[in-house]
Image 1 (cartoon, helix red, strand yellow):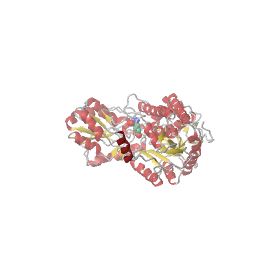
Image 2 (cartoon, protein in one colour):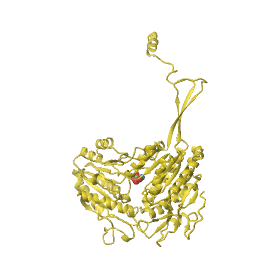
Image 3 (cartoon, helix red, strand yellow):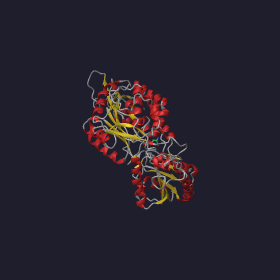
Image 4 (cartoon, helix red, strand yellow):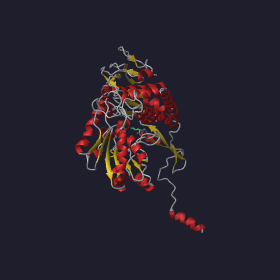
Length: 553
Ligand code: UN1
């Protein structure tokens, strides 16, 4: 249970008195309605210097979700010390018990799913349907790892010496620093923290600056599920402050693991810090995910997949479509079907409009960064087929619903005649834009699919089995869809990339356990004497074996 040691009310609704339902309702009066806190050792804490920042609904900027602590270096250190103090007790808790608490979290998430989904949509503007998908991914993760707590197997291994036993055990790493982007604010932190705590680690979670209320709700639910204090500690912050303090603490020896989802440049900086300290890190970074369409493909299906991969979530998934690579034979037919969908895209606030494909950008910052990066396509001289930047009341597509001045909405963008020598072919542009590249044949298409610096997700639409096989074996990527879009990983398959998309670690399923535990090899000598491995081993000589064999003949 979370204890209130804050003593602060300031006329706002107190987070522990607020039902989740109240958190999910919009509040268009412009001022924060909820006071949010860090949660350290099970206590509500404000920033040590009293600093705060606001969280606003990007679909309706007057709707302020609340005010949250702008954590200081000291706050992050306090959280790390709380996680360090909680570690021995949690590591000693039987893994099946840890799993049961995780299962309780999944069941509580199910109970509160509708409210959590509404908060996710309110805080980052994703459609209700997509928020429900993200929350379901967190639930699936809990239910998967509940039973992993009953496995967490080690091995018994035969010794080369008599009267001696060998074993392997999975051991927790210690204190994990968790940093995630806000686009999957329920699924991604749960991908990280649930296996981390299942293995017996404790965590300090720096919430994404654009989803502090949702992160607070999730941490509160984790405690209500029976999590002991100090196992998960939540710190908020806007800008690079709190996240950077967490990474800096690696140099001070306060962190045993960093798990990060975000941009490649930040991932590289974290990797360098961890590397010089020999601290393990999991890095899930950017992507420029290719989707190839070959002449044998079902074109309607391919158009559907490319459209969803490019513009679902307003293109703000790390698995979103980057380069659409079309075989020249189907180029015109594909593009005419694709463009008619793009031009009729329904965009708006999903809380107030049904059936929108996407809502606003995740926040004003994401909108600003998108517009800047989009400039690369223009500078490269790519041919713009559709898209006029920011949607305003005077500049909006036909199917924009609502009042554009209320939020941060973007047109869908399509740039054609993109070639391998252009920057926009290689750089991730996080938002609703697809760059279209023409291929002369399968080998050329595969070459293009491999030509960007990234290797996260990929897809190929074809009904030629040999082509599908050659794509699967020839593509360098962590994930591949055959006749499917680039997005949509499931919670029990390994998620992650190669090349510029990460350092080879994986999230999800049994594979992630490698990232949050180390193998401990133990030998138990029962003979009562010193037996030397390799040296005291009975030698079976070939000459003797040959002699024995000849005797038989
Ligand atoms: C991300 O964008 O960081 O596969 C995660 C997908 C989602 C997860 C995306 N299940 O698109």
